[in-house]
Image (tube, rainbow, N blue to C red; front, top):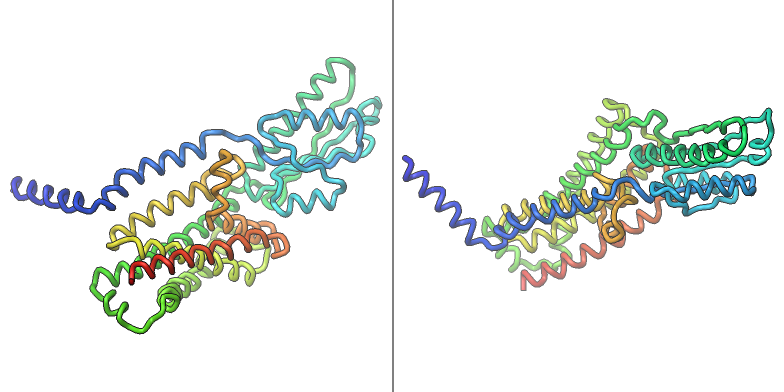
Length: 368
């Protein structure tokens, strides 16, 4: 019995070894995934985008802003001119934290009977970035006040914290929409990637080649079934997330469905591209595994995109899942509209067209 098992093991290893693509995926892919994950998570919390509304324009208020900008956790990028502009920046997800310094801030600091106030706002669609940004802002302002109190006697500043979109900082509200996006991503990618490889393995690819199909017709014919199946699953997943787990649904369901279909088309394009490259369904599944881990790393699923190194943050713009996570969290938690989400929607359109074109050209080379 031992000899038979040994022979079977040898046979399996020999068969795997003959498939160079499979060997490359099994050895190189886990190492690359670990490198990407380690690189994206190694910086800690830093450079969270800060927006400030200074309504006092005094030396004291400028000193507070300088103290905020001098922290490694916060990066001052926006100086809002009014409250409406600050709200627009936070609603659009362009900043993680907002700080409002009210009028007569310096005068209240000098007065013996007044308590100056500063409002700190956290946009908690990303509860990690929001809580870290609010804590860093509180620490920076407290540090500045401590240095001032060593010079004169004064009342402390009252810090008023306002957590928007997720006031309780419930981790489910942040993570469950992303998990829906992940399931949609995996389902679309996996079904599409098995399309042509299954034809190749069962021997029907040759029949498909000799039939009078154009390449675009084959791409569309292989893309529509995964799209329909995933679109049928998506409302069920959304129903569970909203009704069972209590995740808020603040925005338009129709807009979310439309942009989800757009995201699916981009991922189905990736799946069809994998299907034209992989020779077997086993290879296709491994390709999907590598693609999934890579996209989850670049999309900000594990770590906020703002906290990634510059190169990874830039490359993440080429990942459809990154844009979809902004969309689904924005619609569900903020009630965001297309006027806010149009950059992400445009990115999905361009990526879907580009990936589909590459898949069609590669399919042509395979069929020629």
